[in-house]
Image (cartoon, rainbow, N blue to C red; front, side, top):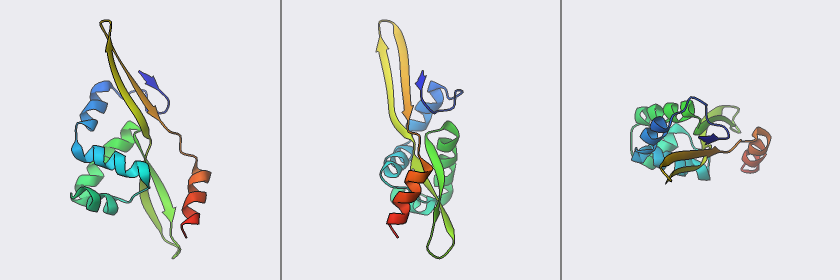
Amino acid sequence: MTDTSVADDAELADIVSLLDDDHVRDILAATSADPLSASALSDHCGVSPSAIYRRVDRLVEAGLLEEQTRPRSDGHHDTVYVASLERFELVVRDGELTWTVECTDVDVADELTRLWRKF
């Protein structure tokens, strides 16, 4: 397994099992474009917040999704999620099976700058 930031104990079966879920794939796709809260993901996916939290927890544990805090202008903060998975590749060649998981390293300073521009 080639891996840039996924937990070393993340096994192929675990990742494939996660990616076998339509809602997980929707969560990863949506959060690759913009940081989203569990409530926004619930609306986007058309499932309950508790179903979103179960999937989000598994994705965060596998290192495929990152939890961040988004400051609001009223002084409160929201928890949002950002996909860290950039690429998953499975190769079967010459009698061998290999896989690659590539994840981004989110720069907190860059992310905060991007978020403050929205205010």
